[in-house]
Amino acid sequence: MSLLTDLINLNISETTEKVIAEYIWIGGSGLDLRSKARTLPGPVSDPSELPKWNYDGSSTGQAPGEDSEVIIYPQAIFKDPFRRGNNILVLCDAYTPAGEPIPTNKRHAAAKIFSNPDVVAEEPWYGIEQEYTLLQNHVQWPLGWPVGGFPAPQGPYYCAIGADKAYGREIVDAHYKACLYAGINVSGINGEVMPGQWEFQVGPSVGISAGDEIWVARYILERITEIAGTVVSFDPKPIKGDWNGAGAHTNYSTKSMRNDGGYEIIKQAIDKLGKRHKEHIAAYGEGNERRLTGKHETADINTFKWGVANRGASIRVGRDTEKEGKGYFEDRRPASNMDPYVVTSLIAETTLLWKP
Image 1: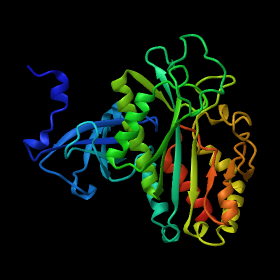
Image 2: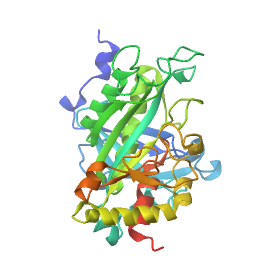
Image 3: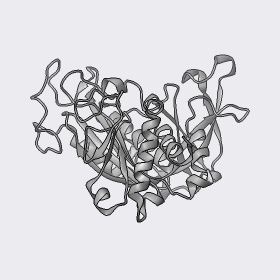
């Protein structure tokens, strides 16, 4: 008699040409991910080969009940680390039946910015550091923390090892490998300052692909925590008090910044970002004011400042960039729950298209 795990792990590619495609889209909150599967007659390699589909938008807070159909357009394909074989994950964005992007579809506007010839010519690269917190199911309290109580103060947990300091490593490693299997350009992981909090980095990714990869990496993480019986939180300040918040530091460079003389281009870009500080903060995630306090390696939300190797600045420039006179910089303001399409495209728009 087969065990349930045997059936879950069946490799259908051994017996059929058919493929399971898991269609993924962003729900009504702008942060919740939804998905459903369909069977395809055979393997596909490009989103243009996939059919559009639909879902009930009244059940996701994205359409009224009397006109509830929302159409999803396949935009990016990844290998499915859960079903494996030829099966795929399909990232989609959402439209009305008339072909208009719905309000929560932030990818559509971002794609317009990234397809602008002035942006294309500069080949914007992004490296996003996605922080998150693992929570115990049902009690919504960080993994490894005593229920209703607190662990020892911060200090021993950052990049730590040991059962009394690193909580959830199996989940983190499973996610790391699953993302690499899927084809996401994950460049690393580490334990964060607050116990139960971790980070993965995606990049360098070019243009719209940075947003695609972060969203699918979040989807994979939530699926893995589902299996593990834990909950993942992207709240920027999940625990009040003397604990670090969670951000999504966004590293950025253009071709001009990466070439000789790029440091001057970087300083010009930072000057532009400073002039639009309020606009960026408004787009950098909900609840970010609880995180950007001027403490715990942040700049105050109402203050814009930059510096070399300064983790208390809004924008941090690395020592290597200063020394070599070219490279990239890090926008430390985005919250962990930011929409990567919004953040990456706004940075490109401000630095490459906006004329002060």
